[in-house]
Image (cartoon, rainbow, N blue to C red; front, side, top):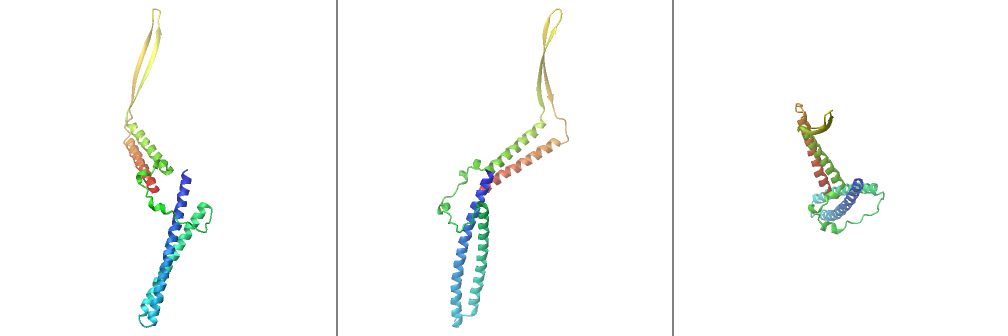
Length: 206
């Protein structure tokens, strides 16, 4: 279950990354087109002696920088497509745009059912196990009580009778030079770690 959820999450992430970089590539291409128009205008004005060649050079620099940015976006998009192909086993020719409703349906933290998320459940089980370990270790501090009962029948020439016995046993741990205290601290440390893992698992959902 956790593996399927992880694959689905990675697939959705790759899909959104492709959509994001596609939008960035489109925006970069529009910027390049606009800058090329600016460059052509600057070149015409420079040839007519209305402007210096610095405007033309500046436009060329901006175009080169935007083309470099476009190449970076294209490389990132190609990487996301490769990741999606690995996860789905399909090399898509085109990616549909994400539904517009996604941006209109914010998810409240109060509405998240963490108990249905495998990673959170696994972390919570570890936290409960660590809590039990703390309680079990602390119990070593306390003495234990036990009661033993017995019933013995005696038979003599004159009479027979029963002898009832009840014994209370008290067992107390001997002083161990702080060993038990160290064990408790270690168990509490493990509990804190497991509690932080629960919170991290919840954050990973967001």
